[in-house]
Amino acid sequence: MKLLVKINGSPEDLMVKELVLAENAVTKGIRAAGKGLKDDWRAQIQSAGLGTKLARTIRQQSYPLRGTSLKAASLVYSRASKVVDAHDRGVLIRSKEGFWLAIPIGVAANMRGPQNKRITPSGFERRTGFRLHFIYRRGQPSLLVAEDARFTKRGRIGKKGGRRRKDGILTGAQTIPVFLLVPQVKLKKRLDLDRDTKLWESRLPGLILANWKGR
Figure 1: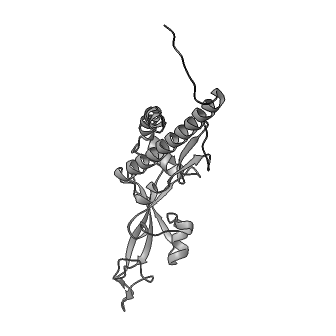
Figure 2 (figure 1 turned 45 degrees about the vertical axis):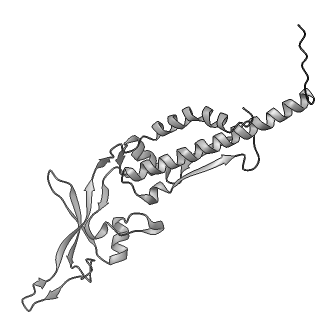
Figure 3 (figure 1 turned 120 degrees about the vertical axis):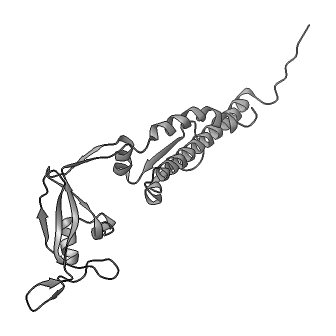
């Protein structure tokens, strides 16, 4: 028996064609895996109750920026990496100065400081004109309070003091807790980003094959 094999085109041309198919498949597979991981991380952050804003800090960048390559890569990252990492690991947070962490409560909870960051005690004083006073509580977190303050109809701190009666007593004025002081805070682990990473790593070979035309 004699078998005759005929190759259409040169071996070099076939190798180049196969290389092009491989580069295309790898690049598309990597990009699909990166997008899948980005979407799953965003969904996980939202389902953990950490908000849409934090979820949108998850971004994806694929390489090469143009064209295809066997060395294609996809980077999935957060623009608020420290915050996301803290919830992913469940870290212990201490004050940078080693004393107290000031957690805004009540009227200060929704106040924002420069660059939309959480309000600080000094920022609160500058913004409202109130001097905060330290209140020690044995066996409980201490407080920073605004004395002789009052609430407006919208629930915000109004001008200092209330009305003073003839006998010198202020009416309508209150001592308002503004910051809770604690030595440290242990964040609960609310994310498992490594779980999704391993999932998309396992799916990658299938994604590459699915994009390999002619196979």
